[in-house]
Image 1 (cartoon, rainbow, N blue to C red):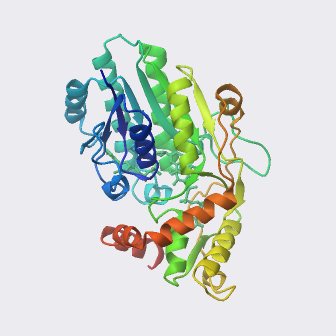
Image 2 (cartoon, rainbow, N blue to C red):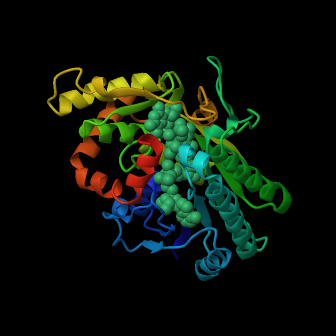
Length: 350
Ligand code: NAD
Ligand code: DAU
């Protein structure tokens, strides 16, 4: 019999790569993708696997408690990989409530539904919650986040993710729910919504629009190729120790301004533009409120205990990413139409 696995948020950026990996790799799993299809969810991301026999899509909002309980009763999943979330920090600053609802209430609905469905029969069951390094707060120039770094979230987004992590852990300690958590650094790669730094600047350079760099551009992020994150999720889901947390990171720290200049240089070559054309578009703008200075992840637990390593260098990954966007301009143009135009105007053109 096929094992039923729920993947929430499977139409989004990371979720779509996880769904593809699991559908293609595990024919003995029935993958049920649960997604509300917000502005960030796009079934185009899954065109290549949508007709596979071991794939089902359910358009459901995780904040709808009854709908979630009904889904669990219908499928009785053995595993849940929970990625559905409001994920953009800037949006959390303008509209925190949406983040509280989806990220905290939505996660609690899933926990309650899993607890009820499994009814203390936890053998071979897993509730795997996907989280972020932002829960640990902000670093200065030195040090790395480890799994034991105290939580210190500083944006409504990271506070909502930290709350959901705490709830997941509380269900492990209180009810014995078999949980796993991973906290990952910044992902980049194909299918990322162009509100996030890398696809936003690719899109702007393509269209010769200003490149908004917050503050001085000296904030530091650790970048990981999205397929390496999906591979880590696969490994943790199958080999992780129940109740444990794993940090995932690329060991690949960049100042924002250096990322921007790197993308500018590659784009000039790809678009046959005179060297320096794209850099001239750089525009330093007002800083993000409460902008975290630096994130850096120590992923040695995952590397040493489960044998994970990133497969791509940043050089390779960023070229692959830029080429994907340039070869998928229709995807890009479709997702930046409609509501996103209004968001962009409010955010950058007021
Ligand atoms: P995304 O915004 O691209 O996708 C989120 C998906 O969740 C979308 O398909 C959306 O439709 C769906 N969704 C949102 N609200 C929903 C709701 N109420 N009910 C059902 N579905 C809903 O996000 P992403 O960047 O792919 O991130 C996925 C997960 O990974 C999130 O939990 C995020 O916190 C975490 N994460 C992201 C990164 C990153 O760099 N992007 C890094 C670490 C962790
Ligand atoms: O660290 C993991 C997190 O990474 C995830 O949990 C989040 O879901 C994901 O959105 C991402 O958060 P960031 O805020 O780090 O990503 P973003 O792409 O929004 O910004 C990256 C950096 O670039 C950050 O320092 C802010 C800056 N930035 C961003 C935008 C959108 C700019 O300078 N200009 C911009 O226009």
